[in-house]
Length: 486
Image (cartoon, rainbow, N blue to C red; front, side, top):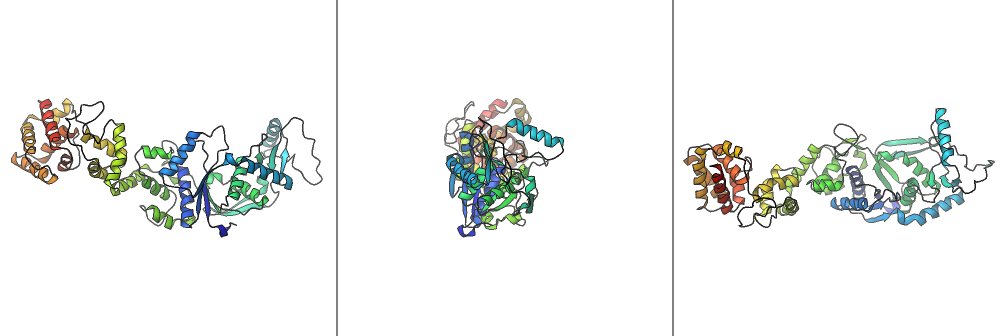
C-alpha cells in the first residue's frame, strides 16, 4: 500500500562507483516521467556507502549525465553518507523492539556453515544460531569480537507484491535468511539504507532494474517491521545488445556523457531510451512532453530490450534535421576546434596549409546544409572540415579526375566566377552554362571541381557548397589545384 495523500514520489538512486550508463539513464527517465505524468515529485539520491569504490569523478559523471539529459530532480541530491546517524538510530530502535539482533558468528563459522549446507545439497543460508527465540539459550558472546546486526526475518508464509511491470511476484520467507543490516564496524548495509531512505523520503513508487527483484522481498519485510507504508514496485527488464547478450561497451554500455562526446543530441537519446522497452502504439518519434503525457508502467515490456545503434542514429538524424542551425553551429564549433579549426576565423587550421585569409564562413549555414546527411554532430564536423581546410588531393586523384581535356573547362569556370554575383542561383546558372558550352556531362565537370575545391568527390549540390565559400577562396583553390595537376 502506498501513501497517496502525499502524492506520487519516485526516486533514482545511483551509486557513484562508476559512470551513469544507458541502463541507469533509462531507469532515471522512467522514474522521472512517472512522477511528471502523475504531477508528483522526482528525487535524486546518491547511494555512496561503498566508500572504497565511490569516487568524486563517478559522482560528477552521474550529475553531468542527469543534467545533459535534463532530468532535473525536484528534491536532492541526497547522500547516504550524510545520513549515518539516522541509520544508527533506526538500528537501535529495531534492536530494542526485537526486530533485529546481534550476531557474533566469525567468518570461519559462516564458511563452515555454508560448506556443510552445500554438502547436504541445501541452499546456503544463515542458520539463525544467534537469533533469539522463546526458550532458546544463546551462548555467551565471545570476548573481543564485534557483532554484526541481523534483521529478524519472518518465518513461514511469504512476501508478495503486485509488480507494476511484471505482475504478481511472491517469495517464501523460508528462502530469505536473516539479513545483515549493520556490519561489525557499525556501518549499515545497502538493503537497510535503501529501506530507511525510502521510508524517510516517503517514496510511493520504486521503478528500478529487475536485477533488484531479489532485494525487494527483504526490503518489504524490513519496512513492515518498521511499521512503514510500502511503496509500489516496478522492475524493468535489462537492456541487451543486438545479439541478445548482456549489454557491454561495444553495445553501448558506456557513460551517458560518451553519447554527448560522440555527437548525439540529448533529445534523441531521451526519445531512444523512452522507446527502449516501452511503447505507445506505433509511435517512434515523440517529444519529451508527449512522453510524459503517455507514460505508464503498464506499457513497459516484460522482456529485455535490445540496443540498436542504427535506430539511435536514425533518430539522431531526425533531431539534427529538426534543429535550429545556430544551435547546431554552437555544438559543432568546439568539435571543429578539437580538429584544429577555428570556425570564426577563416582558414585557421592547425597542422595544415590554410587558404589565404578572407571572409569567415557562416557555420550555421554549413550545418544547415550538412545536417540532412549526418547521423551525429561528429559527422557534421567531419564534413564541415572541407570548408575550413584547404584540400591537398593526391597525385593519383588528380590524374584520375582532372584530365588534360577538362582543365580548360575548369580554368574557364574559375575565370567566370570572378565576374558573377556570388549567389547559389547565379553559381548554378554559371555551372550549367559552362557544362553546356563545352559539350560535357555534369559528372565530368562536377567531380574535378569538388576534388579541387573540397578535396572530395562527393558533396551536397555543387552550387550549394560553392556558395558557402567566399568567391576568392573558390577561385584560389581551383587555380592552385589546376597548377598542381599539370
